[in-house]
Length: 316
Image 1: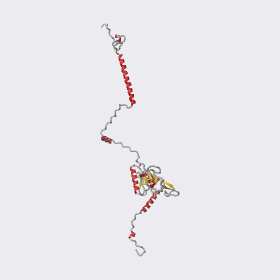
Image 2: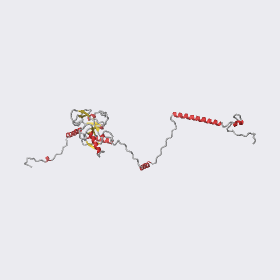
Image 3: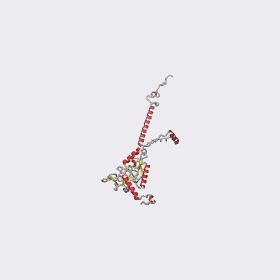
Image 4: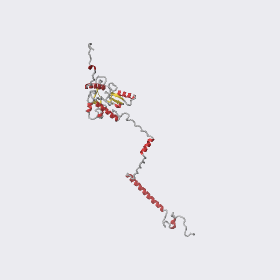
């Protein structure tokens, strides 16, 4: 403790000071480092990004082959029905249960000479097709759903109307997805959008969720007791209403005229038949002294008076 050339430490030197909060500059530096990593590496496999590149509802970027491998593993596991959570760039998670939960992001590419490695150092770099800005940590980028074309956020704000400048496909403001969002407001908006889509039976790509397009289940046949209870509750069955009497009026004028003509012909035929019948009856009877020969000779010619007669001078 002395006479050895050393020093005696005081209390303030032995007690550790409390950790100081990071300044805004330090926070920005850490955030930029994370963005640089996730702009060049897959958030799932941590491998360098390579086309085709897909994104989920939270704006994270993945290699499509890594997502396919993840889905295959999830299908073999016991909890594949609930899906596996994929870690995002800042601890957020998004459930990827099928390819409908991701959208292929179509970046504008500008070729460069030389370089090797991931997208940052590779021969191609990602650019906005409208403004020409290089997309990365220093530029806010967004992509449109469902087409997937990526632009700088400033270019999308200045777009006239709500149609993609690359494919002319229409979109809505809520389907403009920020890539790797950092602000809490953007994350909350994406979370609310996903919950609204799920309540409507849709996925991030605006396609129907699996299971919502299946065949309807056949209705189970009710038992006899259920049928009896239903009949008792409904009361006695009412007889069906009688059919309306057919209308006698003929609406078609041609049919009415043809029917009147047929009825007239039939009445004329009946009249002639009655006249002919009367003439036949007249032949059965004869008038008093009519007929050739007169007297008894005329009567004998009549059918009704023909027969045996007793002469007047005959003996009785």
